[in-house]
Image (cartoon, rainbow, N blue to C red; front, side, top):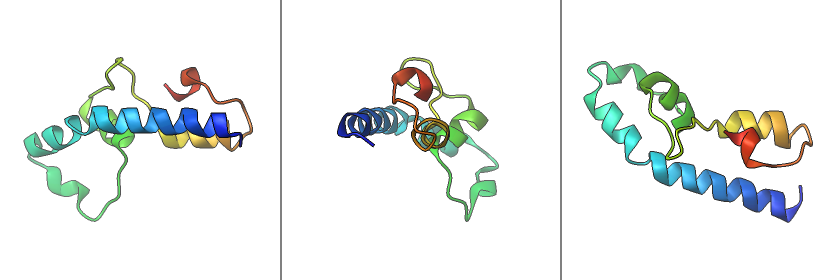
Amino acid sequence: MARSQTMVIFKLLVFSVLALAVCVPAALAQDADVSRWNGQSLSSGELAQVYGFTDVDGSRPNCFAYMQEVIEAGKPANVEGYR
């Protein structure tokens, strides 16, 4: 993978993590059934699907699907595929 592709992915991941860092704890704090997540490792993308929150641009990024469907498949990195 080229350095430019790596930097694009890194910047997208950091931006999404920072944007969702407020939404995830707030959603979990309001969930009466939050214990259903005990013992699990979840991504913000998975939780966004359940709780309905979005990134700052209104999208629901799924970095793991992007890594599998674009990066591992050898396709060029771009913002459109990530969103």
